[in-house]
Amino acid sequence: MSTNTITSSPAVRSFRSPTPRSPRVTMLLRPTTVSSTTAASVPILTKLQKDCATPVPVLRNIADNMAADMRAGLAVDGGSDLKMILSFVDSLPTGNERGLFYALDLGGTNFRVLRTQLGGRDERVIDTEVEQVSIPQDLMSGTSEELFDFIASALAKFVKKEGGKFVLPTGRSRETGFTFSFPVKQTSIDSGILIKWTKGFSVSGTPGKDIVACLNEAMGRQGLDMRVSALVNDTVATLAGARYWDDEVMVAVILGTGTNACYVESVEAIPKLQSHKSTSGKTIINTEWGAFSKGLPLTEYDRAMDAESINPGEQLFEKTISGMYLGEIVRRVLVRMAETGSLFGKHVPEKLQTPFALGTPNISSMQQDTSEDLEAVGSILYEATGVDSNLDARKMVVEVCDTIAKRGGRLAGAGIVGILQKMEEESKGVVFGKRMVVAMDGGLYEHYPQYKRYLKNAVAELLGPELSSHVVIEHSKDGSGIGAALLAATNSIYEH
Ligand code: ADP
Ligand code: MG
View 1: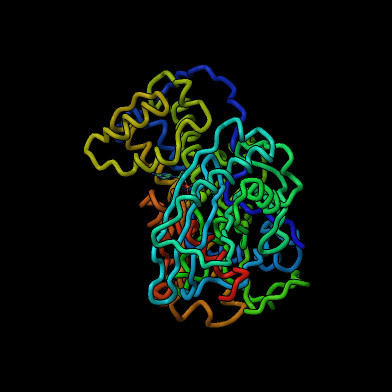
View 2: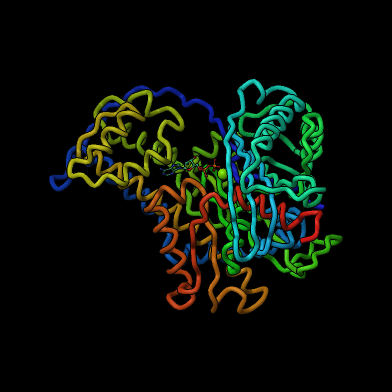
């Protein structure tokens, strides 16, 4: 049995506050060809672009390392940076699922409840209803019973509203899928032990316990007749949700606050798997690829951010490519440009020196500004970091954003190619030479067009025009919600 981490969220939430620095006045040498505002920042940008460069040989090396690490992680627990966790999901939705199924998604400050009525191959999804409930702050640091009672009670209220097209056959219990994005040691498709809470949760009494049992007990206390048929992480749920519509989905990738990927693996290709039996001969592996590290082009800004994080040396791929960090890396470069290049004048505002002041949505929005004077860039910069900027400074900032987004997107693309390579090595022709789909989800992938483009370009460059024409990289919006309900159907105790 392997140690399981059911999460695609980053392990780092807080950074130490920065050492206050006094504003510095720098004497500038001003070449006549470069604007006086940016002259001293140009070499900083040039060095950044050099350190972040991801030409094809670098990407190819990343893909090869990813494939090798996957193999080593499948051989033995702890064999590489990649945990290669068994999800216990051996069969994916086919489209033939029928009946009423629920899903419960607990991943952060909100949880979502969903029900869906499935009508089989012809009718597919007859109806779906979703509700989002925010978790009161005090429950995030209360007792396990309090938290699960709150969840079960919200679920019970949701169930009471069941009607219309939603029909439970007589004599059956309701079944739900449970997407739970915290570190869990999975013990079967429907059980798993919470290792620890993360993301601001510090609920007493749950770590060390089977979270499905905690939920079942709470549902019992609410008098709710429902059983958890599948416990999964959000990557696996996304794969299931996308597979329902398309038989050729083989990989799912989340690029949101954090990042993770899962894929369909042959059971024979998993030496560390001993007792687990799969009737299909296939199983879903949760790679936990955020921990990947070999061959990443890192800069001094990445190293400093990592060193100040609460998990130095860990989750390096995630720290280079995921939404939680891209804005922060840009901010660190801008601090350097402000301090040694006076990019925003003599004064360096405290706000700019505050870790995570600049979010990835900020850098994405700045890159969407096509106006002549980059007015939106100016106001986002001012709002987020307190700096005043002229047009030359704004152009420089956009260059920095682009450099970091480009590296992130291209590395994510190389990671995907690494997974495809590993799958192809296992069984020739399974991936390349025929249509195959990679299902993508997460706020970063969805809302950052440049990032998405860089990712796709990198995949195309690595695979070449012939192979890449068969690889479809497709956004599967909110597949994870319905995916968990579908996995409840696939793993139903009733005949199906
Ligand atoms: P989570 O990963 O926390 O489950 P999401 O998949 O919704 O949640 O992703 C949220 C993340 O997506 C944010 O933390 C942010 O990094 C990124 N994001 C959100 N909006 C944008 C945007 N407009 N541009 C770029 N990145 C964004
Ligand atoms: Mg998510």
